[in-house]
Length: 119
Ligand code: HEM
Image (cartoon, rainbow, N blue to C red):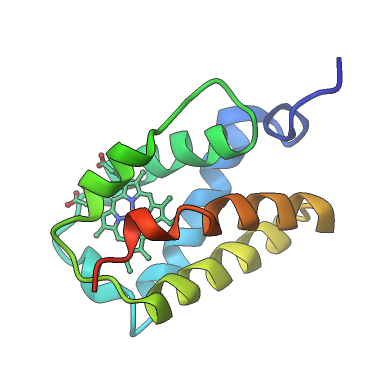
């Protein structure tokens, strides 16, 4: 059977490095950093790694309902969502993900917009 994207890029250890680099960019972003001022980033990176793993066919899952619950108290705009998507794309490219894999992950992430944007 073909290996999942998750396996091809080295599993949880490798994906958590990408996710850490992604959040470094998020925290450097004037539009996005305000959301994370009081957030425990270690825990955040763990959760987001699990989410990314699920997008790549790895052994983890995050339901849309959980996503909705995590973001319901914020007023995240479409523009902020798009900014985050762009930073994710850059992070995957920085780690030499192939174009097709970047597209797949970004599309998957993008398809959850309605569970995250509440504005
Ligand atoms: C498809 C896009 C996104 C996904 C998949 C995603 C995923 C996640 C996940 C898995 C968590 C952890 C939930 C938990 O602790 O149970 C989380 C929390 C959080 N996300 Fe997102 N996120 C997305 C977009 C965004 C955007 C665009 C922002 C801000 C502009 C944002 C801000 C936050 C914040 C502040 C938390 C912490 C929640 C808390 O502990 O109160 N997220 N997100």
